[in-house]
Length: 340
Ligand code: DAH
Image 1 (spheres, rainbow, N blue to C red):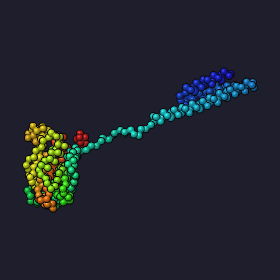
Image 2 (image 1 turned 30 degrees about the vertical axis):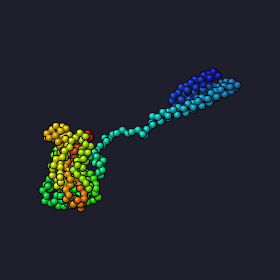
Image 3 (image 1 turned 120 degrees about the vertical axis):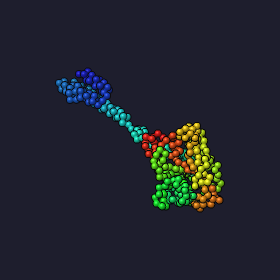
Image 4 (image 1 turned 60 degrees about the vertical axis):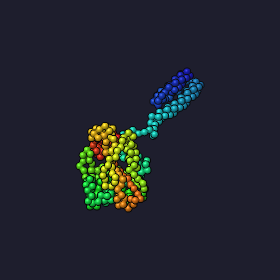
């Protein structure tokens, strides 16, 4: 009998040590300590023994029962802790982990990129930005810029009229008049914005397009200053190898006036279809401001000089990236824009 109890104890302890889950522990509990478990059977059978034997065995069996119950509880606690640790590890959340990108990222429009390159090159030379309205007085868009009512050069720009006195600005040049009227010279300004002209849409025309004006007012300015500033920003946008040339031209707001060409960005100057075989591409208009403009805006042309240039930002963008249809720059097709 004593041996039987010792065996039950030994076996139960082994099984308890080996058990890896709650179900196994339950099973051991039932098969040893349960109502018809091995130890319970022995305790029950003790009734048939004589008094002394019963007392000794009873003590032994109860001690084993207590021991096994305690061991069972300890194993249960250990297992619960282990499963919990495992679950915590599996469910752990790293809140610093970057999320999965499901939305495509946006980017800057190629024209915005080009504009910023030019602007930043100019800011490096002491320029600041200045903006005027898109709906503008005829007076600022034309008259103050040396284009009076009946001036033939008004025909160069097909104008959207809002009423007799108000237009959609046809260029960023009216910002020059606004700057002269409001900013104390000397100053260097870069003036970007949308401009409007009555044009049929085709590969090289859009009724809305983007220009950028440069305007410098100081006591002592020459064409050489203009050339230096233009060459700096042209190199910043097109690279150091590009060449620049001035071609005499006419603008009512400047005297002398020039158009500026760069060596063809496609063929490098040898001559191709893009430059119509000339090796040069026109990129902007510029000049020394006509003294009338300063005068019209209350600035004494004997004391102050001005130089100015106007750039088509879309055109520079086309030349820089080899875009052959201006419509692509205004239609905002994501498939086109995602290339830049
Ligand atoms: N405003 C002119 C245009 O839109 C461009 C231009 C030419 C601007 C000469 C200037 C300039 O400031 O000096 O065609």
